Amino acid sequence: MDSEPVTVTAAYRVDPGRESEFHAWAIEMLNAAASLPGYLGGGVMGSGSASSKWRCGW
Image 1 (cartoon, rainbow, N blue to C red):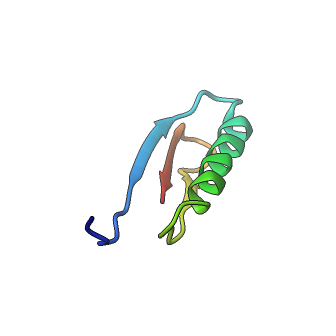
Image 2 (cartoon, rainbow, N blue to C red; image 1 turned 45 degrees about the horizontal axis):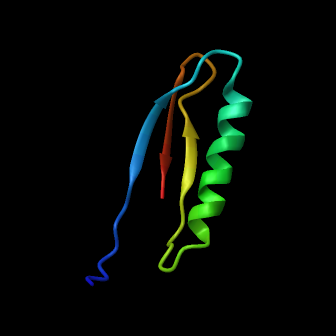
Image 3 (cartoon, rainbow, N blue to C red; image 1 turned 60 degrees about the vertical axis):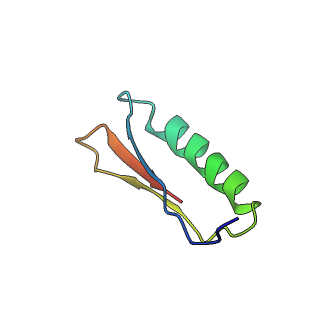
């Protein structure tokens, strides 16, 4: 098995008013990924209050 690092990013559109729910879900996903061997880190980024676009990377 190859052990080269891999970065995964995903973009999501979040319905207005559900940002907190999405953020909590994304943090749960990052915490789950953190338990896997080789995990190097990750994060969740929102595009600001006027946008529904969010990005997750791990």
